[in-house]
Length: 329
Ligand code: ASP
Image (tube, rainbow, N blue to C red; front, side, top):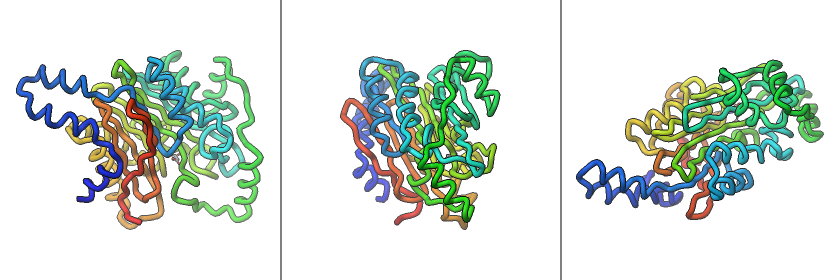
């Protein structure tokens, strides 16, 4: 009942509604495959929260026939460059010492991936992560090494600490209270998943992490399997929220594996959040939101507290889809 209500609200099941009768009536595998193929929703892009501009940019790339990996990079860069977004890229809130440190990762349809951790002074960590993926034999570069690598690849030194974030940090220092609000006020990390016209899936995730974190703290967002995972034969998942808890369950990998076992993106996200809550039985003070997409372009989301949503662009148009939550309002 609960789920049906959500489905109605989100309008997410177009693909499954279309696919279900056809699949049921098909007897041989070939026919099933052909039917599923033609009903795949593509291109399509989704991202955590209602990041209209970022997803519109990604959609522009996809609808021009571009590759999912390019749509992801171009899309999330919009948020990295938006100084008003205080948890991604320029304008991000600093750590407790006043330094803005950025985390990002990217993964393509071939299973290649790259990540940067605690990167300072560089405005587009997603692009550096892509360079790590494409131009080094490594997956992750951290701190000074990542910064040095970025300069070598032609990235310019930038001041990421805006006056607004600086003033808020100075204010915060007066009490140095580590409690932060639950929703978008401090969790607007962008995780994005896309399928291009060829049916290939890629994903990316970029953040300045938790506001006023300890210097050197890294959350889930740049960790392949935790903040993001893509398997081109199954689908992808990405996360926002308290990264430590996502890392403990290897959340995005878990969700992709659950989809591999037959769960819908929606069911897989719900199970992902439930696993986290099983380890946090007495806690209500944190938020996590997952989004997922399978190979057919079906999507889903689930979170701990209401207030989380995701933006979706597909040939049907675009919408901000509210996620159902573990705790009701
Ligand atoms: N997941 C990010 C982190 O833990 C933060 C967030 O999404 O707000 O660094």
